Length: 498
Image (cartoon, one colour):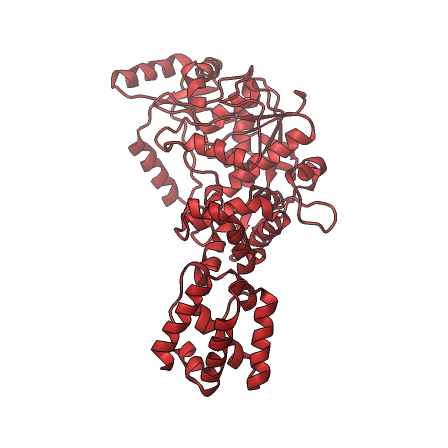
């Protein structure tokens, strides 16, 4: 491991692990592991009002589920801790540098009330001006400004601390992803808050202090952070620190709408936890997320985390928006399910048990039967493991309703002939008949009655399973309990054919 490459993932415990944040974590992990560097997790929990219970635990558990590990974190402290911003704030880490900026005259205390700020903003809008902060101490000496501070304090007002923006300066950097970027200081909207009235540092200040003290060398993050970069570069410059190498990854957009993927977009599941519950595989999630804004060489699209690590190249991060394609995710997950069905089988069992179709004890006793049911039901076609529940529910555990269409098939002249022939043949077959025997029996009825196609198969299916469509019928019949099937047939006959 080397300190030449130190990267971090810094989530806020204000929600569950979002796909976009998972991508940030994944690419930083890949970057660190590819270059034998250090991957740090830092919890940015200073916004206590928005933090949710177990938010940090959820983040870490879902990262572990994705197969990511880390070298330093709250649960794995190193020499640059603590790794929660709230704890760092308690130790006075941020205050030290805020005081330094105040002493240098690069920051100041602002006592403007929210009402005053709203009035200024309204006036700017009326004048069709871009929103910006108006410096209230213009032309005052340091002594005069300190006297103003004292007056405000006497009134019981609590200040925020604002950074004095050098408005004529241009901030430029060579972005790992986007190339050369220049943003003028005037575009940040004037002097900005680095410490709130409650004493907590703001994001753009704290992140600089943390990244510097933790010796973060590269910052890979989403495109929405480009506008934060000039503010952060101001702090690096003001404190005389080296700026890390920035890389801003392309936006993730909804592939169906072309719009930025928003947490309020209810058409797309966006949290890793939701995919876990549905039975998506961590390998598939890594595979899919790893292709959001990054392209491998060649045409292959199925890669393990280890393969991603070996071939990772930050220069192949795309400038173009990354499309979140739900169908592609389903296809990738299907590939991973089919890749190792023995490994997936316990998950499929759990889904069937959770749905109440079979008890855990019965599933264990009848494991071989249940595996065959899963195979026959069509496990190869599922996109995620929870889908197996609907595939096996009928006819293996429950019978569906007989519809009017089914009744028409049964009560037609052909239907009555087929039912009578099938009832006689099925009753005479041994309980352990195999699929070939069932198929030969049905073919015999076809030849004897000269009825084929739907007019042959549908009456038999309906009589035995209450279904028109479904898995291969002879294979299903092998797995169904013969006395139960005979009862189903008797009920169908009594209700519709007598």
